[in-house]
Image: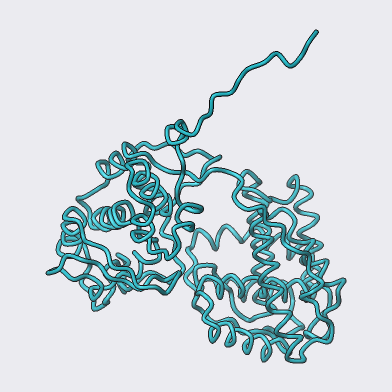
Length: 414
């Protein structure tokens, strides 16, 4: 952790050095240079404080037309926001926390260290997912940074007012993101309260999340779309062979991307032509037949595309050290390349992802009169209602038999 007395120029130099050591590209480092230079001039090269950084950022964003809260916002504004955030992170934590370094360690500051580390030990012991663990760390990391701006350096100093102010600072995030962060905080605060680290039950003072459930019908691809995606996939390059095999596992077997990412050689029985996995989400065993097309795609990748590595995972990164993907990697960039080749236009009103293959498989099976119990078994669920509620997109054609004839009357007499 940095000393609490450090000049702005010295802190900026330390951050730039840390960025190089952390593996940031030269282009990224150069992109932040104007931010640091402007901040040094603004501060008169005095001592750094997070409140000074916040004041500088507020003034700069005002000049740039406001804070960037959406993808359509100012790229320059986001650069300034991230640059000042990097300074605050390094000042408080002594490291730069890259979002993809979800498995890296965070050195929690001062009095927060013991209680926070014990909390995350409890999260792991409780069997919560790696995704929850990572999201919770990000939320608490941001909370501690925010509390520093309010001169709160220990958990027992947190007040309801501090709590409310942090929630208010989340304005502009997506509703689901805010709800997720509130849930992360509630569990953290409850742990601190039950173990005597705070005296106020802050978890009960948080606003209730008001999830309204799915308001839109989930996106699915038709059989024609799926065939188009498969046909346009690159089967020549090593990366293309990898993506093609993953797409067939998602489209033909309905596997989640997490289970595809975690697939090992031991999961595949080539003689029986079956794939047996322990689902990452449900922890339940799932055994599925291995279709011929999927099997040959896997063999083609393993023999002709996969780098030489001792990893027991089927799918690995194609850059040294050729190991497995991080446990929270979504791999959406691989799918995006395939969709571009398939000329499937992006629709900002719809969300496409690996899970779309899973929903599409369930929907297409239903439309071909496959019993719901069978669909449930394929998806690896125990309850048929789960498949019906979350994965099956009912088409207009499927609803036509349900239409009732209605007697039309002239209810309005003029």
